[in-house]
Length: 117
Image (cartoon, rainbow, N blue to C red; front, side, top):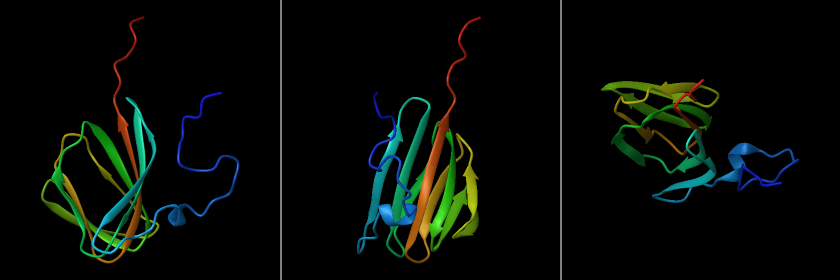
């Protein structure tokens, strides 16, 4: 059977935040799934690193695993910390900046056309 999720061991309890490591002056990522319906990616940001403003065609949910970040959505800034989530709506410009070393799980859900009945 084809495995849909990648880059993680199956049938094993794993510390999620430990699956991606912060690198000095960089943003590291590990893609777990990417297809027409969903994207799930782990990110690790060094302090003050950022993903600049952009838009997405899908709704994106950031789950903060460690640290804290500033998430800006349509010009409004929000601080999110470990254990918190924030939704970045499709079509609205958003950016993420690490206030300190920061890890997140990003889940993006894309709308798919409905099948004809």
